[in-house]
Image 1 (cartoon, protein in one colour):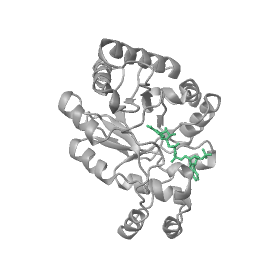
Image 2: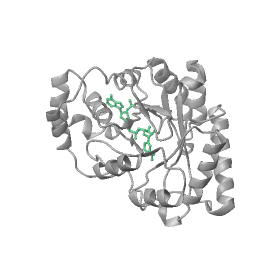
Image 3: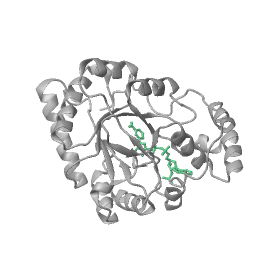
Image 4: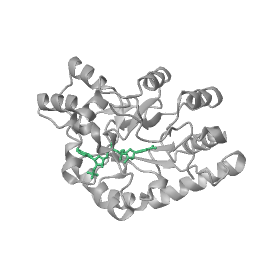
Length: 284
Ligand SMILES: NC(=O)c1ccc[n+]([C@@H]2O[C@H](COP(=O)([O-])OP(=O)(O)OC[C@H]3O[C@@H](n4cnc5c(N)ncnc54)[C@H](OP(=O)(O)O)[C@@H]3O)[C@@H](O)[C@H]2O)c1
């Protein structure tokens, strides 16, 4: 069993603070990666329809042999620009996409279903959200949330719908710590989930300031960064297809970053995103 602590979402559902992300893992390789992750101790898996690896992810879950109810499974709706997501047709499309994801994953329920991007220029995310509310009411997903939403879109949902998103999954790492958005989430009972928590394994992992902290604790920089996410009260979903890193990324308990470490980590923030700006992002 994993020693990873859980966070209680605003509807009482508990999510592990550390999960396993599978973006950019090809479908044929996803089963091995997911199986290794679960066998190593991860209990939360994060995929998405657009990753085109839900089938491999579902297979890996089966191969690992851990009872479904011990796992926390997240996937995301690809509300692409090629469809109209407004009105009754938009609602139908959401329900169809949800069914398709479940079929590929080989499960009859999700723990968390997310709207992948708000695409605010189309004005349809509130309609999509109301379809997710229906799915929640039906019990086919235990929680619903959003991804890449900013304060403007969250405020709109808070004002116009009845279910407060359980979490918002956003780009977040020491270079781009999202302090303002995290404070907004905390104020409204929305948990914060970090995507690209390791900065996609780039320059962040060779930052001298972080290397110094890692040496002080006898840990790797990746472990220090993941520990920072946990101590911030957030959820992180690092991705790796390398078994030694899959294990390394799970071993983030048993040490504590102190105030000096946290101040040092805060000092590396650049305010620059790696990924696209969600207010303008509109891929099809
Ligand atoms: N909602 C969204 O819009 C959105 C966007 C992006 C990502 N996500 C989710 O967030 C998850 C994680 O984000 P991400 O995949 O972008 O980036 P990430 O987890 O920050 O970094 C993954 C990269 O870091 C490397 N890595 C992992 N552990 C390492 C370690 N201990 N030491 C050195 N390098 C290490 C991996 O290499 P190897 O695999 O080669 O080991 C991979 O290249 C995704 O898989 C996905 O589930 C969501």
